[in-house]
Length: 70
Image (tube, rainbow, N blue to C red; front, side):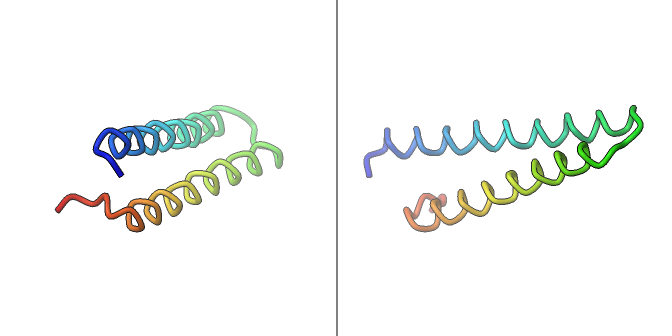
């Protein structure tokens, strides 16, 4: 894998991680200032699961491609 491809992959991972993390933060903030219902709890649970799944996927890809700093 060429250096440019590695850089693009790392940028992709970082951008998506930030997106999922911001989604979780936004949903948590919304729950603080509202009367909580089941749908909002499920939505937050799904957002957290997406973030955790993406983090695991990213770690696996980084390990498989040996992208850790050495």
